[in-house]
Length: 210
Length: 210
DNA sequence: TGATATCTATCTAGTAGTAGGTAGTCAAGT
DNA sequence: ACTTGACTACCTACTACTAGATAGATATCA
Image 1 (cartoon, rainbow over the protein chains, first blue to last red):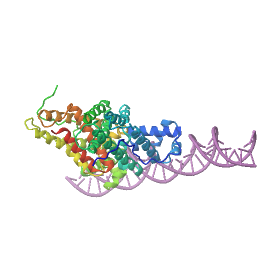
Image 2 (image 1 turned 30 degrees about the horizontal axis):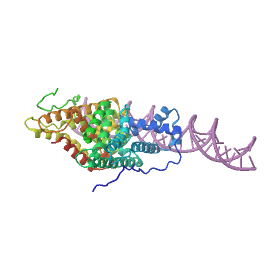
Image 3 (image 1 turned 90 degrees about the vertical axis):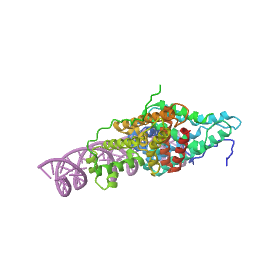
Image 4 (image 1 turned 60 degrees about the horizontal axis):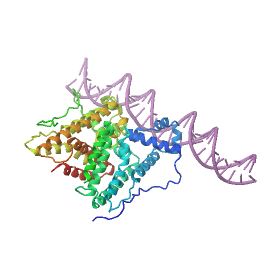
């Protein structure tokens, strides 16, 4: 049974209403933390590392983020917001709109591709899964589920509109795409080879475009 | 220019000749370490964890593996040996032999798939790349390079023999396969969902089999 | 307006616990 | 007797985290 809808709906990932926006320092901490995790992994980033990089004391970081898991949670949430915010309005009468929506989803991937030494935050956390605090484990799982749902819907509706062409179910293809992106990003980091990512992205396009 | 060869040659990954085989305890330490890394990540496994699991003191682990990087190195080497040892003799006159060789390469993947809570050792280490000792960083990079070379050759010769069918270069397809496996394994762990892996493996077969 | 109080963001100085790693001892097996 | 594999006991460095103080900004109120 195919569910019909005119537009790709922005998925909700239970956003806690952020009543107070983050200050400059807090955001700097979050940004540095995110980058370092994408390079080294969650467990390899210490408050001391962060403090030195930003130029404050570790205690000041604890002021903004009492526990490491708080910091991890914020960073994960911001990352998910970024990843799912690139929404392009889709229209069944304009197949191109689905391709544009897909391209928009690839924007964060392109950013990671072009930043040396980093891979996807979620992939890194996924690799360390069992060692993470519960809240982060759940966040990671939820990200993957949301991403699959989002991709499945885009592929399904895009195929009906004639924008995509592939065999098998949309869900199966969504699983392949999510997997190939995660894997390719990790390999490009480990091999320090942007070419790997570029090749895979090209193959991926060939896989779904008519 | 296509390189012709009758057989898939087992790649060398500069194996240091292990003059002395490992004792029972040493192997138990290595095995437990490998499993725990595949669950949590390299940096989240301590000598204390290991010692408790095996039932010895941490100092005893240092006796067998003076530094953590030694332990990591051995485990990485054993993992690579396992991954690349499944060699099936290929024969251009028997296309089925290439499919069998491919299936043999998937055997370790199937093992990981069916073990709850673990993902591929190399993928985990890849995710933590920047925080690893140099020797491990190089080992991981080399694994990916060897794997790509191995897969490329198998796909190329298998396609010539009529065993595989796909568009694009063999190398590009090898990159896709290596990536999709890594990604899928991480996602199945994070989502605790074997179904994800099974779906992806099926799609992967459909991608290269005529 | 001036005094008082509260808030923000940082600091110094510490905590207990854990990390990887070392020195030196000792018993059992060959 | 020598090797093997384990031990006890320890070390230094680092971990996340806390307590308490302080300087400066901002709000409240007599």
